[in-house]
Image (cartoon, rainbow, N blue to C red; front, side):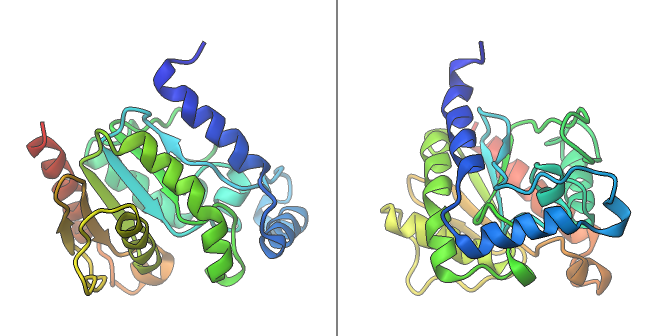
Length: 235
């Protein structure tokens, strides 16, 4: 029997995986799963919404944009099986939040320690651009995760501007004292919230950002080092 702390997340996982609320996203994720990328022709794609994963007792919540079409939409686990995930798991491992520096598929032995990884939108969107209504449809899943983690969470890291704005919106609507006007997104931007977590911004480890040098490994490591310090300061 799973520990009591993980049961709400297990129930949420089942609801996420079964969701068909956004017709455009359902059509796209399933089309990608049928047609596949040439390099993965022999693999069975997940082709469904992707739930969050990690430590149910985490003090660090990591929020991305959405599953990649041939990454998490293929493997069924956030940031697993693509170049963005390669960057992320290497950095989390260096910072002590992951048990290994690689994540290739479910069951590969990767575990997150004191961290939980999720996204604003749970289905791979065309061109990585969810529509406003799709974002709204997915929002209750993130809010339920926050309900689970907020009593002990110390830090939320938003990967990219979409996640940053979405998380700020959710926290503001839940009564946290988000500054007005809200701070602009920027790598390393930090917002400590009274009686709540500290929100920390990072560039997304997309190929566009990593290939151009917009995001370097040192700059990425600085975010996770800062997240670790925030958590340790909270005890």
